Image (tube, rainbow, N blue to C red; front, side, top):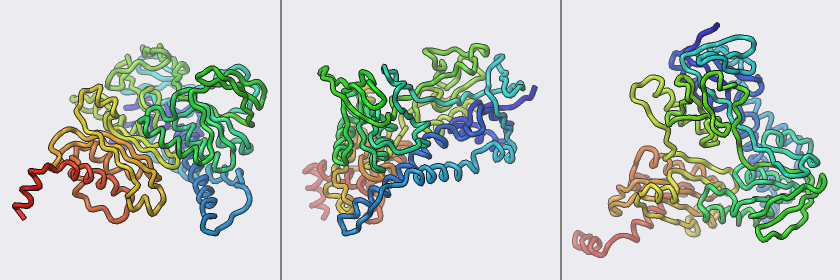
Length: 473
């Protein structure tokens, strides 16, 4: 039986985040992965990397069409085979440093096989038994399947299969209104699919501010994407027809060539046989404490399998916490109060920190700033004056800019880049004054944060302060 300091089950973003860092710190690490082609996990193989490569290509095609306004003409249809080739090419470039041989050359053991617990601190895989002082479960999540009568008749995809589809569907029915559904739906629409999004909820991107969802929905609709809210699929009547029902009970028929299902993620750890290790589950999910530890004190979880936040960068925050708790007597509890994410639509939606609802629930006094981009020079130049920013500042002295940045969102092209200063301020506790003092090279897009804060400051200068300033002058 081979012994290790750390045994990691799964080599997605979660497993790699914790395993590679522990290896760099000098610990003996073992990775167990059921399939060598799964190394890199959802992010590399069927998630972030292929989806953003698809979005990149679709944006190029969309911009080429937009250039017709200036006399440039383009003909023909996108070659879907070339699009798929580009996506796989990008994946393989990254796979060069995310594969079993590469890790073994770095001194990390890798076993390919299905892992299962056989005792408290023992795991079996590939016909061998392994033990470790700490074991981390990082087996990720899977897309939730659509359960509607007649679904077996249709050509259906999810994020794991859409990138290898034989052809681009002429008419695509997208089921779901979250980031995956909206990102892929828009990208495939730009490649040439006629896209209809069916969302059972009241709005798309339900985790965002209602104003954010509404703004993005308007942009998608202007682009020609049909979005049906508060609508559900009653049944698939044939391989190319579905019956829909809206909130009023009104039914209609919709024809399509294929269905893209993106209704959420789910966790399944049954194959690990966690009960053999004394690990309890609740509703199929691992039962975790505030330190990401299971009911077996030497087994932890990281990434999607925690069932907490389904983002590839979540483990980048969880891994340092786990390492601290492995090595330090001063344990840290998991907290997502400084978390951020981006939905890579066009325009992008970037969100960070605490939401308006969370601030109210926690009794934190705050001021909400809403700043439109109609008069922002870069927005005027690049034609995104529809853009908007929302900021939450702690209550405090408005004149001296000491108030902390608590959270917010931006909707604009490249919003994920524009919001980085705000994320930094939120994470390390900088006051709004730090952004107000920064000199942004003109006319970078991210200077809107300074503009929003300065406009708010100017609007709050009291008359007595102006009197003193005139006296000093």
